[in-house]
Amino acid sequence: MIDTHLSGSLITKLPTCPKQMAVFPLPLFILPNGIQRLRIFEPRYLSMIAEAGERGGFVIARYDNELAFNVPNWGTRVEVIDFHAGKDGILVVDVKAIHLVSLDNMVYRNDNLLLADTCYKSHWDRLSSDSSSMALGRLLEQLFEDNDALAQLYGTTHFDRLDWVCARFLEILPLSLNEKEKFIHPSSFEQLTVFLHSVIFGNENIN
Amino acid sequence: MQQTVSKGYPKRESNIIANNIETQVPPELSHWLDSVAMQRDKQAFTALFQFFAPKIRRFGIKQLGSEAQANELVQETMTNVWRKAHLYNVDKGAATTWVYTVMRNASFDMLRRIKAKNEQNLGDDIWPIDMAQDEAQSEESNFGDHLMEKQMLNYVNTLPPAQQAVVKGVYYQELSQEQLAQQLGVPIGTVKSRLRLALAKLKQQMGEQYND
Image (cartoon, each protein chain N blue to C red):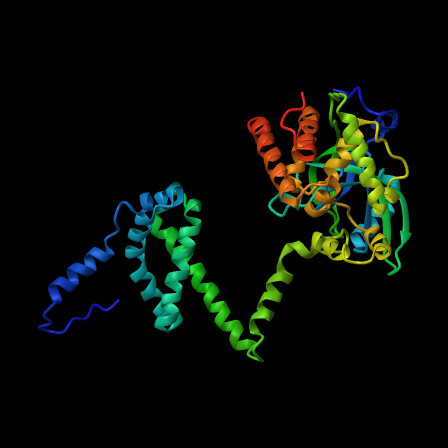
Protein backbone atom coordinates (compact mmCIF):
# COMPACT_ATOMS: atom_id res chain seq x y z
CA MET A 1 0.00 0.00 0.00
CA ILE A 2 2.66 2.46 1.00
CA ASP A 3 4.17 4.45 -1.75
CA THR A 4 7.87 3.69 -2.13
CA HIS A 5 8.61 6.89 -3.98
CA LEU A 6 7.48 9.24 -1.26
CA SER A 7 9.89 11.84 -0.09
CA GLY A 8 11.31 11.39 3.39
CA SER A 9 9.46 14.28 4.94
CA LEU A 10 6.19 12.83 3.78
CA ILE A 11 6.75 9.44 5.35
CA THR A 12 7.52 10.97 8.72
CA LYS A 13 4.22 12.78 8.56
CA LEU A 14 2.21 9.68 7.78
CA PRO A 15 1.65 8.33 11.29
CA THR A 16 0.39 11.69 12.47
CA CYS A 17 -2.18 12.04 9.70
CA PRO A 18 -5.06 13.39 11.79
CA LYS A 19 -8.48 11.93 11.53
CA GLN A 20 -10.89 14.83 11.55
CA MET A 21 -9.83 17.95 9.65
CA ALA A 22 -11.41 21.15 8.40
CA VAL A 23 -12.19 21.26 4.68
CA PHE A 24 -11.90 24.44 2.59
CA PRO A 25 -13.85 24.06 -0.68
CA LEU A 26 -12.15 26.12 -3.40
CA PRO A 27 -12.07 26.14 -7.21
CA LEU A 28 -8.42 25.24 -6.96
CA PHE A 29 -6.20 22.28 -7.85
CA ILE A 30 -3.15 21.62 -5.71
CA LEU A 31 -0.92 18.54 -5.57
CA PRO A 32 1.66 17.45 -2.95
CA ASN A 33 4.52 20.01 -2.66
CA GLY A 34 2.46 22.65 -4.41
CA ILE A 35 2.32 26.06 -2.75
CA GLN A 36 -0.66 28.38 -2.82
CA ARG A 37 -1.40 31.81 -1.42
CA LEU A 38 -4.85 32.38 0.07
CA ARG A 39 -6.68 35.37 1.44
CA ILE A 40 -8.68 34.50 4.52
CA PHE A 41 -11.48 36.72 5.77
CA GLU A 42 -14.55 34.61 6.51
CA PRO A 43 -14.84 33.92 10.26
CA ARG A 44 -15.14 30.14 9.80
CA TYR A 45 -11.94 30.02 7.77
CA LEU A 46 -10.13 32.30 10.21
CA SER A 47 -10.99 29.71 12.89
CA MET A 48 -9.76 27.01 10.54
CA ILE A 49 -6.37 28.72 10.25
CA ALA A 50 -6.22 29.30 14.00
CA GLU A 51 -6.84 25.61 14.60
CA ALA A 52 -4.59 24.41 11.77
CA GLY A 53 -1.58 24.08 14.07
CA GLU A 54 -3.15 21.62 16.47
CA ARG A 55 -5.11 19.78 13.80
CA GLY A 56 -2.09 19.29 11.56
CA GLY A 57 -3.21 21.58 8.77
CA PHE A 58 -6.45 21.56 6.81
CA VAL A 59 -7.79 20.18 3.55
CA ILE A 60 -8.35 22.04 0.27
CA ALA A 61 -11.01 20.31 -1.82
CA ARG A 62 -12.39 21.11 -5.25
CA TYR A 63 -15.60 23.12 -5.00
CA ASP A 64 -18.43 21.53 -6.98
CA ASN A 65 -21.98 22.60 -6.27
CA GLU A 66 -23.37 19.40 -7.76
CA LEU A 67 -21.84 17.26 -5.03
CA ALA A 68 -22.96 16.68 -1.46
CA PHE A 69 -21.23 19.23 0.82
CA ASN A 70 -19.93 20.80 -2.43
CA VAL A 71 -16.75 18.71 -2.46
CA PRO A 72 -15.68 15.34 -3.90
CA ASN A 73 -14.50 12.46 -1.71
CA TRP A 74 -10.87 13.54 -1.84
CA GLY A 75 -8.82 16.60 -1.07
CA THR A 76 -5.29 17.84 -0.50
CA ARG A 77 -3.97 18.20 3.05
CA VAL A 78 -2.00 21.42 3.37
CA GLU A 79 -0.02 23.12 6.13
CA VAL A 80 0.48 26.83 6.68
CA ILE A 81 4.08 27.75 5.88
CA ASP A 82 3.85 31.54 6.04
CA PHE A 83 1.38 34.34 6.67
CA HIS A 84 1.12 38.10 6.80
CA ALA A 85 -1.51 40.80 6.81
CA GLY A 86 -2.24 42.24 3.38
CA LYS A 87 -2.36 45.99 2.76
CA ASP A 88 -6.11 45.87 3.20
CA GLY A 89 -5.72 44.17 6.58
CA ILE A 90 -6.86 40.80 5.26
CA LEU A 91 -4.95 37.74 6.43
CA VAL A 92 -2.82 36.23 3.67
CA VAL A 93 -1.50 32.71 4.22
CA ASP A 94 0.82 30.57 2.14
CA VAL A 95 0.03 26.88 2.30
CA LYS A 96 2.03 23.91 1.10
CA ALA A 97 0.40 20.64 0.09
CA ILE A 98 1.55 17.59 2.07
CA HIS A 99 -0.40 14.71 0.59
CA LEU A 100 -3.78 13.70 -0.77
CA VAL A 101 -6.51 12.52 1.57
CA SER A 102 -9.80 10.73 1.16
CA LEU A 103 -12.77 12.46 2.80
CA ASP A 104 -15.50 10.72 4.71
CA ASN A 105 -18.29 11.49 7.24
CA MET A 106 -18.61 15.13 6.29
CA VAL A 107 -20.46 17.40 8.68
CA TYR A 108 -20.93 21.15 9.15
CA ARG A 109 -19.83 22.51 12.50
CA ASN A 110 -22.09 25.12 14.13
CA ASP A 111 -19.99 27.93 12.63
CA ASN A 112 -20.54 26.39 9.17
CA LEU A 113 -17.02 25.08 8.84
CA LEU A 114 -16.99 21.79 6.99
CA LEU A 115 -15.29 18.92 8.86
CA ALA A 116 -14.43 15.50 7.48
CA ASP A 117 -12.68 12.31 8.52
CA THR A 118 -9.51 12.09 6.49
CA CYS A 119 -7.29 9.21 5.53
CA TYR A 120 -3.98 9.22 3.71
CA LYS A 121 -4.48 8.66 -0.02
CA SER A 122 -1.46 7.72 -2.08
CA HIS A 123 -0.67 9.68 -5.19
CA TRP A 124 1.50 8.59 -8.12
CA ASP A 125 3.09 5.22 -7.49
CA ARG A 126 5.14 4.62 -10.62
CA LEU A 127 7.38 7.44 -11.62
CA SER A 128 8.83 6.88 -15.03
CA SER A 129 11.61 9.11 -16.22
CA ASP A 130 13.10 9.50 -19.63
CA SER A 131 15.47 11.81 -21.38
CA SER A 132 12.72 14.04 -22.80
CA SER A 133 11.70 14.99 -19.26
CA MET A 134 14.61 17.43 -19.07
CA ALA A 135 12.92 19.63 -21.66
CA LEU A 136 9.80 19.94 -19.49
CA GLY A 137 11.91 20.95 -16.52
CA ARG A 138 13.76 23.59 -18.50
CA LEU A 139 10.51 25.04 -19.78
CA LEU A 140 9.02 25.22 -16.30
CA GLU A 141 12.15 26.93 -15.05
CA GLN A 142 11.78 29.53 -17.76
CA LEU A 143 8.13 29.92 -16.86
CA PHE A 144 9.05 30.62 -13.24
CA GLU A 145 11.60 33.17 -14.39
CA ASP A 146 8.98 34.97 -16.43
CA ASN A 147 6.39 34.91 -13.65
CA ASP A 148 7.70 36.64 -10.56
CA ALA A 149 4.67 35.69 -8.54
CA LEU A 150 5.32 32.00 -9.08
CA ALA A 151 9.01 32.27 -8.35
CA GLN A 152 8.39 34.23 -5.15
CA LEU A 153 5.91 31.67 -3.90
CA TYR A 154 8.39 28.82 -4.15
CA GLY A 155 11.51 29.12 -2.04
CA THR A 156 13.00 25.90 -3.37
CA THR A 157 12.41 24.42 -6.76
CA HIS A 158 13.08 20.96 -8.22
CA PHE A 159 13.24 21.40 -11.97
CA ASP A 160 15.26 18.18 -12.17
CA ARG A 161 12.51 16.05 -10.62
CA LEU A 162 9.96 14.96 -13.18
CA ASP A 163 7.15 14.38 -10.67
CA TRP A 164 7.61 17.87 -9.22
CA VAL A 165 7.76 19.44 -12.67
CA CYS A 166 4.67 17.61 -13.92
CA ALA A 167 2.65 18.44 -10.79
CA ARG A 168 3.44 22.17 -11.06
CA PHE A 169 2.60 22.16 -14.77
CA LEU A 170 -0.73 20.50 -14.11
CA GLU A 171 -1.55 23.06 -11.42
CA ILE A 172 -1.02 26.06 -13.68
CA LEU A 173 -2.27 24.77 -17.03
CA PRO A 174 -5.55 26.27 -18.29
CA LEU A 175 -7.66 23.15 -17.82
CA SER A 176 -10.89 22.59 -15.94
CA LEU A 177 -10.68 21.15 -12.44
CA ASN A 178 -12.51 18.07 -13.68
CA GLU A 179 -9.81 17.44 -16.27
CA LYS A 180 -7.06 17.95 -13.72
CA GLU A 181 -8.73 15.61 -11.28
CA LYS A 182 -8.13 12.70 -13.65
CA PHE A 183 -4.47 12.80 -12.71
CA ILE A 184 -4.86 12.10 -9.01
CA HIS A 185 -5.12 8.36 -9.65
CA PRO A 186 -2.00 6.47 -8.57
CA SER A 187 -1.39 5.00 -12.02
CA SER A 188 -1.89 8.24 -13.94
CA PHE A 189 1.66 9.59 -13.90
CA GLU A 190 2.72 8.11 -17.18
CA GLN A 191 -0.43 9.37 -18.86
CA LEU A 192 0.28 12.83 -17.48
CA THR A 193 3.76 12.90 -18.99
CA VAL A 194 2.33 11.90 -22.36
CA PHE A 195 -0.43 14.47 -21.94
CA LEU A 196 2.00 17.27 -21.09
CA HIS A 197 4.19 16.41 -24.05
CA SER A 198 1.20 16.60 -26.39
CA VAL A 199 0.11 19.95 -24.99
CA ILE A 200 3.49 21.57 -24.65
CA PHE A 201 5.51 20.19 -27.50
CA GLY A 202 2.65 19.14 -29.73
CA ASN A 203 4.18 15.73 -30.43
CA GLU A 204 1.87 12.82 -30.88
CA ASN A 205 4.29 10.16 -29.68
CA ILE A 206 7.12 10.57 -27.28
CA ASN A 207 8.32 6.96 -27.32
CA MET B 1 -61.72 25.51 -23.70
CA GLN B 2 -64.76 26.78 -25.62
CA GLN B 3 -67.28 24.02 -25.86
CA THR B 4 -70.55 25.95 -26.08
CA VAL B 5 -72.00 25.71 -29.50
CA SER B 6 -75.06 27.61 -30.59
CA LYS B 7 -78.02 25.85 -32.08
CA GLY B 8 -77.81 25.24 -35.74
CA TYR B 9 -74.09 26.04 -35.80
CA PRO B 10 -73.15 24.75 -39.22
CA LYS B 11 -69.74 23.31 -38.38
CA ARG B 12 -70.78 21.81 -35.09
CA GLU B 13 -70.06 18.22 -36.00
CA SER B 14 -66.68 18.80 -37.53
CA ASN B 15 -65.68 21.13 -34.72
CA ILE B 16 -66.30 18.47 -32.12
CA ILE B 17 -64.42 15.92 -34.13
CA ALA B 18 -61.50 18.28 -34.48
CA ASN B 19 -61.60 18.85 -30.75
CA ASN B 20 -61.53 15.14 -30.11
CA ILE B 21 -58.55 14.63 -32.33
CA GLU B 22 -56.79 17.40 -30.51
CA THR B 23 -57.52 16.00 -27.06
CA GLN B 24 -56.67 12.47 -27.97
CA VAL B 25 -53.13 11.77 -26.88
CA PRO B 26 -51.19 10.15 -29.71
CA PRO B 27 -49.23 7.15 -28.44
CA GLU B 28 -46.13 8.28 -30.34
CA LEU B 29 -45.52 11.35 -28.14
CA SER B 30 -42.65 9.88 -26.16
CA HIS B 31 -41.21 8.37 -29.32
CA TRP B 32 -41.20 11.83 -30.91
CA LEU B 33 -39.48 13.29 -27.87
CA ASP B 34 -36.85 10.58 -28.19
CA SER B 35 -36.27 11.35 -31.86
CA VAL B 36 -35.88 15.03 -31.02
CA ALA B 37 -33.39 14.18 -28.29
CA MET B 38 -31.36 11.61 -30.19
CA GLN B 39 -31.54 12.70 -33.82
CA ARG B 40 -32.67 16.33 -33.55
CA ASP B 41 -35.57 15.15 -35.71
CA LYS B 42 -37.40 18.23 -37.03
CA GLN B 43 -40.38 16.28 -38.28
CA ALA B 44 -40.95 14.75 -34.87
CA PHE B 45 -40.64 18.19 -33.35
CA THR B 46 -43.25 19.53 -35.78
CA ALA B 47 -45.60 16.77 -34.72
CA LEU B 48 -45.02 17.64 -31.06
CA PHE B 49 -45.59 21.30 -31.82
CA GLN B 50 -48.86 20.63 -33.60
CA PHE B 51 -50.14 18.62 -30.67
CA PHE B 52 -48.96 20.84 -27.82
CA ALA B 53 -49.06 24.40 -29.21
CA PRO B 54 -52.86 24.94 -29.05
CA LYS B 55 -52.98 23.54 -25.52
CA ILE B 56 -50.13 25.71 -24.32
CA ARG B 57 -51.67 28.74 -25.97
CA ARG B 58 -54.98 28.17 -24.16
CA PHE B 59 -53.16 27.73 -20.84
CA GLY B 60 -51.15 30.88 -21.55
CA ILE B 61 -54.22 33.01 -22.27
CA LYS B 62 -55.74 31.87 -18.98
CA GLN B 63 -52.57 32.39 -16.92
CA LEU B 64 -50.99 35.41 -18.53
CA GLY B 65 -54.07 37.18 -19.80
CA SER B 66 -53.03 38.09 -23.32
CA GLU B 67 -52.66 36.40 -26.63
CA ALA B 68 -49.21 37.89 -27.21
CA GLN B 69 -47.97 36.54 -23.88
CA ALA B 70 -49.58 33.20 -24.63
CA ASN B 71 -47.76 32.97 -27.94
CA GLU B 72 -44.55 33.82 -26.18
CA LEU B 73 -45.22 31.02 -23.73
CA VAL B 74 -45.70 28.59 -26.62
CA GLN B 75 -42.39 29.66 -28.07
CA GLU B 76 -40.61 29.56 -24.74
CA THR B 77 -41.97 26.13 -23.86
CA MET B 78 -41.31 24.53 -27.21
CA THR B 79 -37.77 25.97 -27.35
CA ASN B 80 -37.10 24.35 -24.00
CA VAL B 81 -38.61 21.09 -25.21
CA TRP B 82 -36.25 21.17 -28.19
CA ARG B 83 -33.25 21.98 -26.02
CA LYS B 84 -33.99 19.67 -23.12
CA ALA B 85 -35.64 16.69 -24.83
CA HIS B 86 -32.72 14.48 -23.75
CA LEU B 87 -33.74 15.01 -20.12
CA TYR B 88 -37.10 13.34 -20.66
CA ASN B 89 -37.21 9.87 -19.20
CA VAL B 90 -40.05 7.63 -20.35
CA ASP B 91 -39.84 5.55 -17.17
CA LYS B 92 -40.55 8.54 -14.98
CA GLY B 93 -43.83 9.63 -16.52
CA ALA B 94 -45.89 10.44 -19.56
CA ALA B 95 -44.59 12.78 -22.25
CA THR B 96 -47.56 15.09 -21.64
CA THR B 97 -46.68 15.39 -17.94
CA TRP B 98 -43.11 16.31 -18.83
CA VAL B 99 -44.02 18.90 -21.46
CA TYR B 100 -46.63 20.45 -19.17
CA THR B 101 -44.01 20.71 -16.42
CA VAL B 102 -41.71 22.53 -18.85
CA MET B 103 -44.66 24.76 -19.76
CA ARG B 104 -45.54 25.54 -16.13
CA ASN B 105 -41.92 26.46 -15.36
CA ALA B 106 -41.77 28.74 -18.39
CA SER B 107 -45.05 30.31 -17.33
CA PHE B 108 -43.77 30.93 -13.77
CA ASP B 109 -40.64 32.53 -15.19
CA MET B 110 -42.76 34.84 -17.34
CA LEU B 111 -45.01 35.76 -14.41
CA ARG B 112 -41.95 36.51 -12.30
CA ARG B 113 -40.58 38.74 -15.01
CA ILE B 114 -43.89 40.61 -15.32
CA LYS B 115 -44.03 41.04 -11.53
CA ALA B 116 -40.43 42.18 -11.28
CA LYS B 117 -41.01 44.72 -14.02
CA ASN B 118 -43.99 46.19 -12.17
CA GLU B 119 -42.10 46.46 -8.92
CA GLN B 120 -38.99 48.01 -10.35
CA ASN B 121 -40.64 50.29 -12.81
CA LEU B 122 -38.22 53.09 -11.99
CA GLY B 123 -36.55 53.77 -15.27
CA ASP B 124 -35.36 52.24 -18.45
CA ASP B 125 -32.61 50.21 -16.80
CA ILE B 126 -34.90 47.39 -15.71
CA TRP B 127 -32.98 44.68 -17.47
CA PRO B 128 -29.57 45.53 -16.07
CA ILE B 129 -31.08 45.31 -12.56
CA ASP B 130 -32.56 41.90 -13.29
CA MET B 131 -29.29 40.69 -14.70
CA ALA B 132 -27.26 42.02 -11.80
CA GLN B 133 -29.57 40.20 -9.41
CA ASP B 134 -29.25 36.97 -11.33
CA GLU B 135 -25.50 37.27 -11.29
CA ALA B 136 -25.37 38.01 -7.59
CA GLN B 137 -27.34 34.85 -6.94
CA SER B 138 -25.04 32.62 -8.91
CA GLU B 139 -22.60 30.53 -6.90
CA GLU B 140 -19.61 31.56 -8.95
CA SER B 141 -18.87 34.75 -7.07
CA ASN B 142 -18.24 33.03 -3.73
CA PHE B 143 -14.51 32.71 -4.13
CA GLY B 144 -13.60 36.02 -5.68
CA ASP B 145 -11.77 37.05 -2.60
CA HIS B 146 -10.01 33.85 -1.59
CA LEU B 147 -8.48 33.37 -5.01
CA MET B 148 -8.17 35.46 -8.08
CA GLU B 149 -10.69 34.75 -10.76
CA LYS B 150 -9.59 34.36 -14.33
CA GLN B 151 -11.27 37.53 -15.58
CA MET B 152 -9.50 39.43 -12.86
CA LEU B 153 -6.22 37.85 -13.87
CA ASN B 154 -6.75 39.03 -17.43
CA TYR B 155 -7.42 42.51 -16.15
CA VAL B 156 -4.35 42.46 -13.95
CA ASN B 157 -2.27 41.43 -16.93
CA THR B 158 -2.99 44.81 -18.51
CA LEU B 159 -1.36 46.64 -15.59
CA PRO B 160 2.27 47.82 -15.70
CA PRO B 161 4.66 44.98 -14.68
CA ALA B 162 5.53 46.40 -11.26
CA GLN B 163 1.87 46.59 -10.26
CA GLN B 164 1.21 43.16 -11.70
CA ALA B 165 3.79 41.60 -9.46
CA VAL B 166 2.17 43.15 -6.40
CA VAL B 167 -1.38 42.22 -7.22
CA LYS B 168 -0.68 38.79 -8.63
CA GLY B 169 1.34 37.70 -5.64
CA VAL B 170 -1.77 37.38 -3.55
CA TYR B 171 -3.72 35.26 -5.92
CA TYR B 172 -4.05 31.92 -7.57
CA GLN B 173 -1.57 31.28 -10.32
CA GLU B 174 -2.99 29.71 -13.42
CA LEU B 175 -1.83 30.46 -16.92
CA SER B 176 -4.36 31.68 -19.42
CA GLN B 177 -4.31 30.15 -22.89
CA GLU B 178 -2.80 33.41 -24.14
CA GLN B 179 0.00 33.27 -21.59
CA LEU B 180 0.72 29.65 -22.39
CA ALA B 181 0.86 30.43 -26.09
CA GLN B 182 3.23 33.29 -25.42
CA GLN B 183 5.40 31.12 -23.21
CA LEU B 184 5.61 28.37 -25.80
CA GLY B 185 6.07 30.79 -28.66
CA VAL B 186 3.19 29.34 -30.68
CA PRO B 187 -0.12 30.89 -31.82
CA ILE B 188 -3.05 30.61 -29.43
CA GLY B 189 -4.94 28.51 -31.96
CA THR B 190 -2.18 25.92 -31.72
CA VAL B 191 -2.43 25.86 -27.95
CA LYS B 192 -6.18 25.40 -28.18
CA SER B 193 -5.98 22.56 -30.66
CA ARG B 194 -3.18 20.86 -28.73
CA LEU B 195 -5.22 20.99 -25.53
CA ARG B 196 -8.23 19.61 -27.36
CA LEU B 197 -6.26 16.79 -28.97
CA ALA B 198 -4.46 15.88 -25.78
CA LEU B 199 -7.74 15.78 -23.85
CA ALA B 200 -9.38 13.62 -26.49
CA LYS B 201 -6.48 11.21 -26.41
CA LEU B 202 -6.60 11.14 -22.64
CA LYS B 203 -10.31 10.36 -22.62
CA GLN B 204 -9.62 7.45 -24.91
CA GLN B 205 -6.98 6.12 -22.55
CA MET B 206 -8.74 6.75 -19.29
CA GLY B 207 -12.39 6.82 -20.23
CA GLU B 208 -13.33 3.29 -19.35
CA GLN B 209 -11.03 3.01 -16.36
CA TYR B 210 -12.13 6.00 -14.33
CA ASN B 211 -15.70 6.62 -15.17
CA ASP B 212 -16.72 7.65 -11.72
